[in-house]
Image: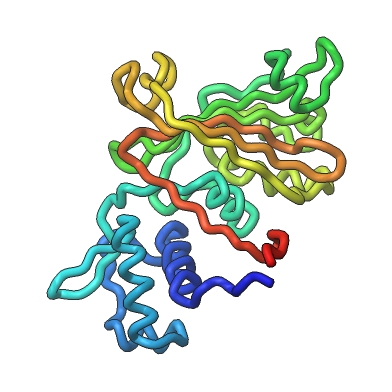
Length: 248
């Protein structure tokens, strides 16, 4: 039987989420260690391990003056972070991020996308392309694909408007009654092509972290996404072994 996640990782995740959601702002000073440990219900030693982890990840900085949320952290939300955030808060964006949608259309997809959605020949899908930024820094380029009939239930899928775009997955669930049950990410490092480099503010051929994700329920794929991040940003994942087979 697997062991529960260590308390210091649980605390680190709670603080990390508050930073990414903007509850804790860039440059904000965290409470004194003893006070924060009391708030989190852990020992000072356990909190210290949590803060050490967040410092390594680039979320906080420490000095004689105390512990602060890093200014312009060199971190980005993972695919899991964005998906769980939109279902939790109604937006895929981290605090301070902006989104620009450059394409939103019904198209006949490439063969590999048609196979992912199990489409008949000639069928269409919704394709959306968008990029995110924070201040002067581009934080990601994304292409998301959806079944064509979703556009009738959620017209915003074919809109370039910024107002509703960050919360589309939640709108899809509410309008169609379908709920994301599971998902998968596949990630690899490679060189940026000209289109990706242009949107990310990089030179063609610069290293990037690229990934794809699938979200599905028992009826099939709800969302398929492709994305890439600049080389200077890091993403992190947490995972549990509770569902893993007993190794004993």
